[in-house]
Image (cartoon, rainbow, N blue to C red; front, side, top):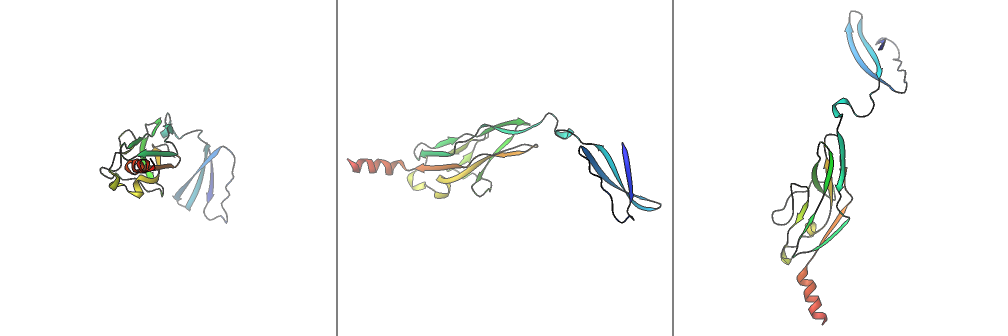
Amino acid sequence: MRIFRYPTTSASLPFPCKQGVHRRMVVKEGWGGEEIIWKRMPKAKGLPSSHEGQRGPTFFSEPPSRVEFQNDTGIIIPCSAQGHPAPMIAWTQQDGNPLRDVVGVRHTRPDGSLVFPPFAAEDFRQGVHDAVYRCVASNIVGSIISREVHVKAENVSQIRNLYCVAW
């Protein structure tokens, strides 16, 4: 290891840049005043040693871009990812804010799926049943975000009534 020393009294601190070299600055206080020591070391390749053997997440099952369902059936939208360590799955709203469960209306399962249970026509919520969501998979190495998932619930009773009137 070569060490370059530059006293802080110098007008300018030379900082020779060479490809593949990592430099670390150490400020050392001594009899002659403060001194900056640049340590030249080989640059680490790949992930830092604290991440060896680990992989960032990749989608195993990315949700589709459009999901339409009927209010009397509900829907489960899967999202799963792999990586090491195993990624955590979360969902966000279109604005990027984390998605919160709404009891009886929308919730996430431990496996990462987004669930819209069946609901009565009068319980339709525009911001829940006709909205855009994204799945996010994260571990200590990194995060990935799915494509936008446009979710739209259709009211079955309205469709049946329209069908009956058309006869």
